[in-house]
Length: 123
Image (cartoon, rainbow, N blue to C red; front, top):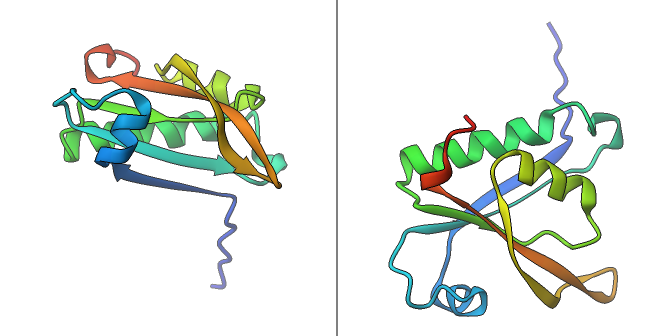
C-alpha cells in the first residue's frame, strides 16, 4: 500500500528564555512558561477545526507533560483568523507588541497572547 503524507502546516514549542521573558514582561514571574508557534499553510485546510485541534493538543501536552503554568504566542495583529482560533482555545490578548516580527521585509505589530493553566476548562 502506497501512502502519501501531506504536510499542511507546522508547530513548535520552546521554554521562554530570559530575553523573551523580559521582552514580554515576565522577568519577575517564576512560573514555567512555554511559547508556541504554528500555522496551517494550505488554505484548503482552513476553517475545518484543524488549527483549534493543533493548538489544544499542544497546550494539553505542555501542561500535562512539561508542567507548563502558562503558554504564550505572538500572532500578527492582522491575522484575525488565527487570533479567533487562539481565543477559542482559551488564549487572551495581553498586550500589543509594536513592530515585533519581520515579515516580507516589513516589521509587523503582534499581540502577546497567553493561556494560563488555571483557565483550563476548554479541553
